[in-house]
Length: 594
Ligand code: HEM
Image (cartoon, rainbow, N blue to C red; front, side, top):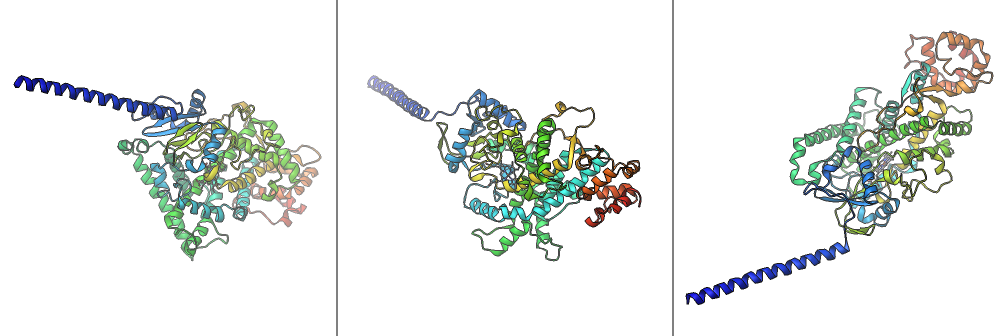
């Protein structure tokens, strides 16, 4: 019995083991074929091998990510995959694939990944840039496009742009009058932030004042934080690392300070007793829309703050860095500088100040700006996207919730799309169909598709007027001992491509120098002091030329008056009315001590 029982139980045991082994085999075969089927159907795009859990995170350097991704695209393919911690990602580096993502599959690919700092700073995605693709985004985008970014609204702000550009000319004239070097990074950053603060907030911060530098520092910190890799975004259970690195505290601090700033601005706008400027600014517009309750969504104060954040961040740096890069490329390419100045000066006639509606005629200037945006686009990786559904890109099935980087920096250098891609040749845009409106995927500095930059017109209006006047008013030279080959194009880390070493150049008054008929006159003669003034007295050609250029002199007048009588501070040496300075006797009084 025992032996029977034993033989039965041993028989049963071996049968059980056999069953388990067989089921394991069937199970394994099932999984093997399942995987083989899915592998056959959707292999992942090639890409570098990563480590368990962290994937490729340890191999990436956020300070020059676009360059690294460009190198990797050459090694793998124009579509390659990465594993960012627990998140799959793909990187797109060709115009054809960019079209697939931003046009053919725009709907499936226009989600924004939820990242810690972006969510916090955008009041949980109540802005445009970091909001999920949903009804709220559609409505807020529609509101902004109609009421803030429309061409009509952009031209309403033209007087602000023109006034501020004149102030800049005045500032550079002061440098020019004493042959002082102008730091274009500083001048242009201050100009663009003043313009956008007036347009958006209705405030003109006093230059170099504590308020300007405070806002500037807050926005710079915001930009750094938005470009920083947070571990919790990619490996959520290791978020404590961000706390240890002090990143969460930095985000919280920056958020609180910016929030306080936005609140003050809003309170000021709601205070009916404050000295409101006549023209509505963007905060006025948003508050008016909020109070009208006529929109399909009820705008909250946080929504308004989030939109203000987008505008301050989206407009200031992008425009400033682009103007700096244009001037950098022009200093490096004297042929192009000469050609663009000739175009501007011949089409503007004798006018010293070029107004916004005249800039439309400068097709070569437009080509110079486009070529600069090709080589030095402010946002080289645009703003990362995420798939909301699975879709096929480049023949690969890309699952939902995959991070997408469109490497516009690499696309703008694609040798198939561009001849001599590394060369600065604005002529390539003359008589070319390629425009900036997101239809030509080899050139996408403003992105494309549903999420394309809505500030294109505003950005261009500012770029045009600044550059046309900088190039019309002054001739530009390098400081003594510096050659054009010494100008570098190194870039600072961050989400916008900013020039690392400041562009410091010498401005010379152009019109004073070249419009004199009798001889070439040193452009700084007027401004350099009394010995030059007495030279000028002898030189009737010079006086004649000065009267012809009375409009130009209007801008230099405070400097001249101050130099003539240093006891009058430059701020008080206001520009006199036109009738004065077109009269020869006024010149005699200014230059020859009355
Ligand atoms: C040279 C100037 C500018 C450049 C190169 C630029 C570039 C860009 C790029 C690449 C994007 C992302 C597009 C995408 O994801 O496909 C973007 C988005 C955006 N830009 Fe601009 N921009 C400029 C000027 C401006 C200005 C002046 C404003 C506002 C006044 C602005 C406001 C925005 C906003 C709000 C978004 C987010 C749009 C959304 O996601 O719905 N930008 N910009």
